[in-house]
Length: 193
Image (tube, rainbow, N blue to C red; front, top):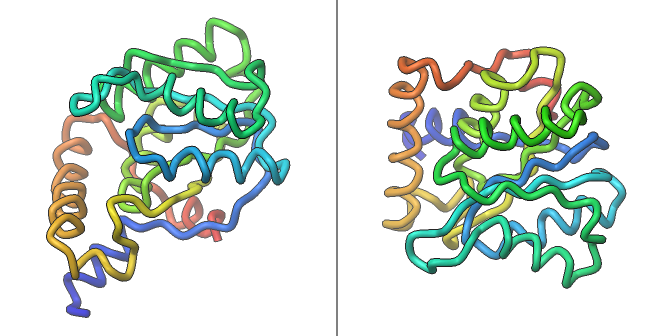
């Protein structure tokens, strides 16, 4: 692996050990792996509440949050533990729109730890967005899953992997400059392991 590939991999693909948190924040996607990953966290007792976020997917025309919720309910997650946000069309909107829901129902003030359920290569930007816009006392932990048939180790070997990962790599400096993200600290990253 070249030095540049190692740098990109180590920066974008966060590693974590699942922890008990107050909420699973499930970023919208049409990738079915998200449902199994979220179900696994819930069934193991690591998350008592689940927030699913995502609007209508361009390709499928289906609402991402509703599709994920339906999949979780079909696996046995009680509907009453799932909060849905159904309008977001991107990561920033996932965070901002969901934050409003949590503020409105009074639960945001009670949250101390959040597990972000997110695609492997999107984990850093997702957590950076949460860190920038949620209250500073909340700790965030990634729960990643492989999507598009590539992993942390295999992304350079596929055209889709290179396309998705390099697009993500290029978005972060742009969104940092716009003020949409806050960089993770060494202490943040150490707490994931």
